[in-house]
Image (cartoon, rainbow, N blue to C red; front, side):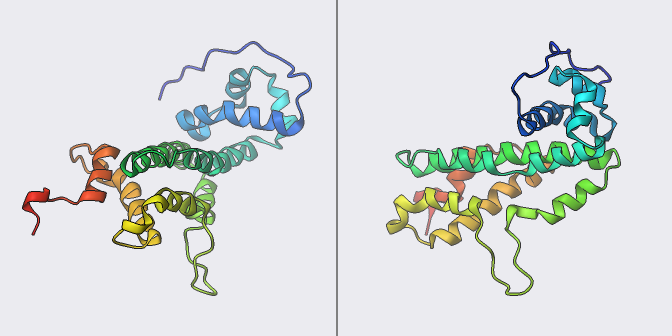
Length: 217
């Protein structure tokens, strides 16, 4: 981390901006700073990055902690992730579809992890509670029924398998779970210092296995 503030953008009054638009603009300006400085980021730094007066922040947020919690919620929001997954062309070969999906998941997890880790490392423990409350965007099982609620991320990934449904060796739902496990586990694998496996290699292993075709039994 450095102690330098980002270059100030020209200060504007954002004419015609609704409260919600101003809120989102402040959050977007704050996110990279929160990822860098954690809880130590100042509202003055955020105001400079957003090109607004510091007082404008407190017309939108009650205090800095509310702004930081909004940044956690934004980092965890899967709306953009879903848009990107659903924009992957089904005309592409399956391997390319899955590699693009994996890279999209990587980017989402990296952004989310950077913000939450920085806040936790600097002492904002409520960031951990937010993770627990929203873990997996619906991927956890419900305590009452034991059934998993609909998960838009899984549904978007499952759609990428649909054109090949007739020749898949396992149900689409099973393959979606396996692919997610591999994609999410890739970060932990790289953290061990093992040689880097890019997403295309991971997809190749997922689709074709670890043994060359001529060596397979």
